[in-house]
Structure formats: structure tokens, C-alpha cells
Length: 413
Image 1 (cartoon, rainbow, N blue to C red):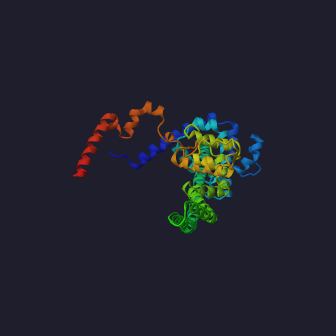
Image 2 (cartoon, rainbow, N blue to C red):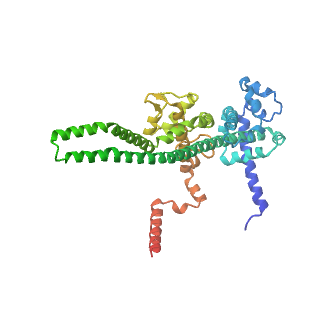
Image 3 (cartoon, helix red, strand yellow):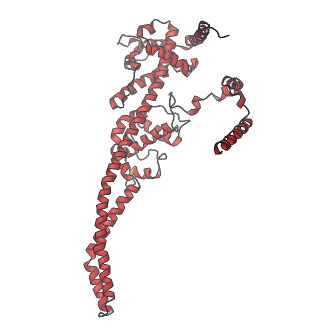
């Protein structure tokens, strides 16, 4: 017999309220007076920032800007001014998270809980949040802060990926246009070389052959005539050699794709305006990310975006290591930064570079059941997922192997 809707709804609401009360009890224990003032300042419509300055005078300006309504919406634009505005909000949220770190750790909210309470705040007006009981209000505000902190990190990572990809698209397009233009010039140069070889090399060889087989001349006269002929055609020969060298150099440039890197270097400043502030601010997970790239990003963050010959190079490919140096001595900052951003974007997309505080770009293991919980609750978790039939790995693989083999026979037939 299926329970009625009211019975199910009441059971769910009862459990939600029970869980909520547990969280409120934890907040009541761990939340300090300073934390309470900090959270209340988000709802304070007075711009004087009195509550904030009472906690920390240096943070007065930050908290004055950190009104709840101002932290609800972020820009999705990749314009530098919009990115900087998002980063300013991220710094505020980061400050709030640091101040509330002990409480956030104590209540240990799940992703579902964070989303549930945070969305209530996002959809509510200031007065609706304000009239909640103290601990209930603080629970919702803490979830809101964590949610927006994660969400804004994802938004900035998205902006980084879009900015880098847009730059690469422009580089590719301009490189193609340049390549097609150069191809026309190469065809013209090639035709000139062919004509020069025909006129100044093949014709000269024909004349030499005529002299060699001239029966009326002795060997001394033949050698003198050949020497004279070679001296007369020396300028033409040098011209052909120059044309061949020029064609060879341009071909090597295309083959090594150096032209595209040169275009990337020219686009670097525009890319830096968008991506550099993001890379400086994002909190990457050093434990689960590519160690060579993390080393370079950490150095970049510590130096405030300034790089020199001591900047880490391990993440670069062999050709890239050559290209970031001018005359193999002086580092080209624009080229280095552009390549750092390209590798950063590529690694974020591939999962080789992860964020600590994020919904979308965390390490794969962070999305899985923890190892401890799996060991303790394995039978129960398998039952909940209807996977008890697959507990025995060998038996499961044998069964699947038979099914697969049977399907091959059926398909082939």
C-alpha cells in the first residue's frame, strides 16, 4: 500500500527540520560573537560599516561593499572590468570564508545542503532573511557564502577558459590567413627560382658541356673557357642561392609552427588583461594537480604576475622553451605568460589542474564517496544503489564476458 502524499511530505519535512536543528545546535556552539556581527553586517543597510570596523578596522571597506544583494549576482562577461568586479567579490567571499572557517568545518554541509539553504537566501529579500531566528539566519547566510564562493570560482575559471580559447581561435585564424598569403608569395618565389635555375644553372651546364665536347680546343683552352664562363655567371648563381635559402627558411618556419607562436605573443597583453587577475586569485589544489604546472602558477602568484629568467619552465614543451627566450638569454614575459595561460586552460579542461573550492573543477576523487565511508558502509551503499549482484568482481566479469561473446556471435550472424 502506497502512503499518501501528506504522509510522505510530512516525513520528509520532519527529517529536514531534524537535520536543520542539528546544524543550528552546532552553529550555536561554534559561532563566536565576532562571527555573528560579521554575518549581520551583510544584512545591514547602514553604509557606515560600524559593525565591520568593530571587528577589524582594516576590513571596514571590504565589509561595507559586501552587502547581501551585491553578492547575489555576478557578471558572466569576459570584459576585463567585469572580471575585476567579480574578483573583488571573490576576495570579499574569501575573507568571509576565512573568518567563518571553524564554523563551516564544524557543520560540514553537504553540497545538497549548501545548495538548499543558499538558494533560499538568493530568492529571498533582505527583510525575509533578517526576520529568521538568529541561528537559523546564520545557517542560511553561511551556506550562501560558501555557495557563492564556489560558484564564483567556477565562473572565473569559465572566463579563463573562454578567454584563452577565444585568443587561440584568433591566433589560428590569423595564422591561416598569413599562411595563405605566404603561400602565394612562395609560389611566386618558387617560379622565380625555377626560371633562375633554368637560365643561370642549366644553360650554364649546357654551355660547359658544349665546351667539353668541342674537338677543336685542347684541354687548357677548355678549362680557361669554363673558368671564364663560371666567373661571368657568378652573380646569377649567388642570386639563386639567396632565393633558395629564403624559401627554405620560410618553409621551416611554417613546419615548426613558429608563426602561430609569434601571433600568440602579440595577443598576449590582451589575454593578460583578462586572465592574469584570475590566475592570481584562483585557489588551485596542489595535491591533485600537475606538480610542474602548480609550481609555475604558485611562482606567478607569489611574484604578483611578474616573471623573469628564474620562472619555472618544466611545464613547457621543448620548442616552447626555446621560444620564451630571446637569443637564448633574456626571457620574453609576454610569450611566457601566454603559454602559461594556455597550459592552465588546457589542464583545467583535462582535469590535470583542479580547484579546491569549486562545484565544476574539483579533483575527480572529491566527487566520489570517501574512502573511509566506503570501507565502513560498503554493503549498505551497494544495497542502496541496487549493486549487490556485482559484489564479486570475478563472477561479474565472467558473466559479462559470456554476454559479450554471445552478442558478437549474434551480430556477426
